[in-house]
Image (cartoon, rainbow, N blue to C red; front, side, top):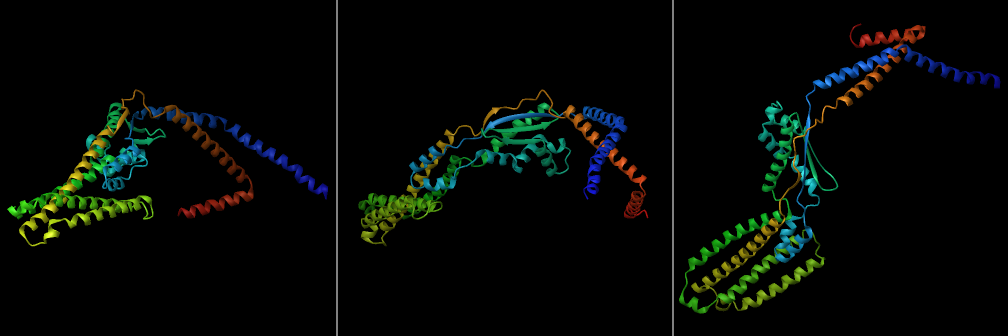
Length: 397
């Protein structure tokens, strides 16, 4: 039993050695092809690379606007009741770099670049989407952990590549001017709309007040002080209610801030109830001309209070926006590159040589295997059936 099993085990190393020698013999027999073939392909690839137009890469770097959340939050708290609504609307930007990278890839900015440099003609694009694809292919925007955004543009003309890289920042600045990106910008836009609405309401209230006329009895009653108190309290209550509504968007009713705001609202309402007891209309009743005047005067003072509040906060938002400085700070403007970035001729030649060498080595091994199979009757029959099946698959049989 031991003798019978020892014979095939002893033969295995010999079979492996013979197989390795066969492979080595195949390589040696085709050594000229395996050496000269890849070398010729590498030289041809190197020659072709000289015919490829050189590509230059221009690079620029800029720093996006930095958000100062702590100072902005403190300013919002100092603005008053409506500051809470503006702060909630602004929300803050968690990662400005990611947002600016999205701006750079937006169709709005890409189309602006296409129009500015007539890229449809330069890229020989029939449709705008083709020009967009070509521009995105030739442009790379990235940001690192340092927060600096880098823009790289490829083109055959080094000066044109530098002009396009710098134009990206210019077009991005224009886009920033149309968008409210920073917290101060969002608050400024928010209060700007509120100011326009309050101004229109104030104008309507002023017209209604003027339509009543002023009588001697009205002047003698001197309702100004009581009416102003009521109007200002109503304005403060409205502002407090807006603040609470905005706070409930990101806080629960059990939060200390909500409870404190509700206490302040209740205090204002109590003060309003006391003030209304001295209201000339509440005391004397309605129906007289002077009472109509007092009611409209109170509405006018209420609208005036809101208008003044919005104007004040709008101006503060503008000051905060101006304090942020330049929207984009350019670190390194793009300069026309002196050296080309593509094609890399040596790398092309090396890759072509290695690829050709691998392909030829596989070719000689397969060819030798087919020759060995043809020498064996059983393998030759299988090859014949394979050729016949292949012919039928191609419709030749």
